Image 1: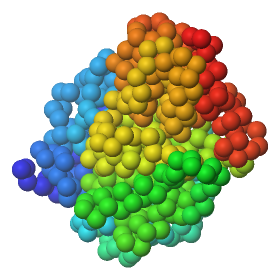
Image 2: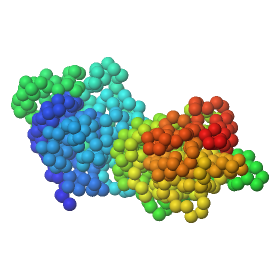
Image 3: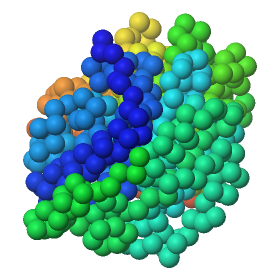
Image 4: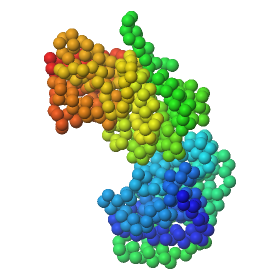
Length: 280
Length: 320
């Protein structure tokens, strides 16, 4: 049985996030496929959860009391794989096989192949119902684990999310925490130009959720929000983020949803990430 | 309980609503294993779960009228270590939540038991929106999901008991349309292993669910006409009992399949896919060809020739 992982400070998380962003670039460079914009927007949330909040044992992935993590926006698998490798679920060198023929690292995560993945996501609107089931099960069993689920903002246009949000609110599942990666861009355009989500916080509140809006790149704020005392309601963090965060020519540009940088752009991106000033 | 009551002819065999056997068995299993939970969509009454709810209030998860969430929640409950039995009217389970069944249950390979209640055309007059005749075709298109269709209360009990310990994705029909007992005492239930109810060498009647007792009746009538019919209860649609089907193809002069389901993609298709490649044999596929007109379940089965008359006719066409 491996011991629980060490918790990082906000400053430590910021440096880890830089390393994860560099890992994402390397991961998508080989197949020249991936979803770089969302990978970079969700990085700080994933890093905070895996290295500052959640309890799990990479050497004992089926540990019954592990905190559950579900990446509903499964297309951001390069970010998830980079974090899982960093956490010790598999060797970092395996990232080089991302999307290669017969690789365990499919374009969307597959729990049959990769430990640490709880649910095979990809079709949008699936993660929250699944996470509600994990949390309801924990409640019925009297287990102490928590369930975390990360949602894209665009995927909130899927109705299944609201079925699940309604039920989690109804049951008062305060062992459940959702994070909305609010980068305001979906594949084809801005969310507000496509099918507007605002007033997003009001919507979650109306469904019975403890709703927190914060900077989704601020590790200290994320830590505080994740660890704030429970109040009998499920919690949602609306994490305001920048799609493509950390690389100037990718940030907040719709065309970088799943574009892959050229070799020259990769060099520039790496330089920018290496120079990135860390807030904490 | 609002089961459709069929007129019972004097002297006719007693018939049963399999939902009763299902609910009794589920409660019996739940008493012994606290991992068993029921998940439903405002279908406590129609799934016969009132007693379960009263006895295990914490283990009845009623998500309301939200089938996509229902199946996702069930997969999450399996992740949490439970054995979820999802109880929902067949059309809304397999139709509305098809992608959740594919991704959350089958592709994840979680041990969720999806119980399509009141399947086929048992909601008769409510019409095609409430008929579940596409379920076999839809479920057959998914990988890694076992498809069961018990023919009577005994098989329903056996199937539920097996499913509770199987730890794999399962879809099971739970019949509302009253059927007689057809399973001989002492018959073991093995998923993927058909039950040969009657031996015969001229024609094979491969039936499932409601059609099994009708195939037995047809075999009796064919016998009077000098035609020896083998009757096979194909209670598992996937994985298919290839050995029983290939034996029927080899040892008889033709195969008639019969199911309360669309003729494209169901049991008949499965049998045809096998025999055309391994041992071609003349076949007739009896099922539902199109959205049904208005009528009771009993009327609709007769309307589509899903009765002894239809089976006899098809058998004589093949080998008469």
